[in-house]
Length: 145
Image (cartoon, rainbow, N blue to C red; front, side, top):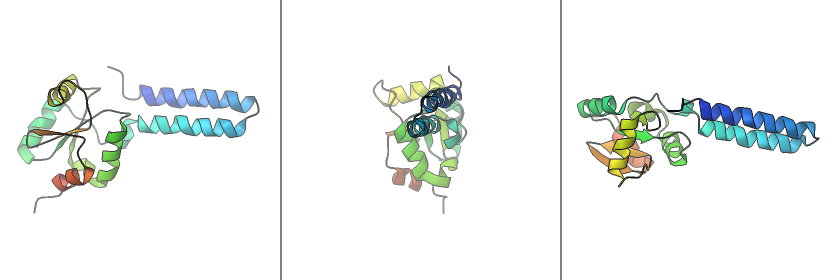
């Protein structure tokens, strides 16, 4: 397994090196644009935007006890990023499982999606939902009345 910080750091360092090369050849505008693209790639692949990941077995056990959704995700997935941003602060109420770091989570996603690792896959009440509407997930995260 690749540590979660390796891809974003490689994007940041690679972008800085390429931008430095462009700046030294007299293209500061191109260097700034390239650095911006690589910085965006680093942010999208960063685990900072997501709540702390947990083990799939632990997440499923906790979800069975309190009814919260389990979100299976992968860094760099634009649909996962979309879901995370649209959930806002409520995202912390869900259990997040990074399938790159948890092989059992990846196996759960493959079982739910005919062998594909399609994310985000959200499990609510034991039923998987592939790339659900963020508004629907937000309703599941609302505090019980």
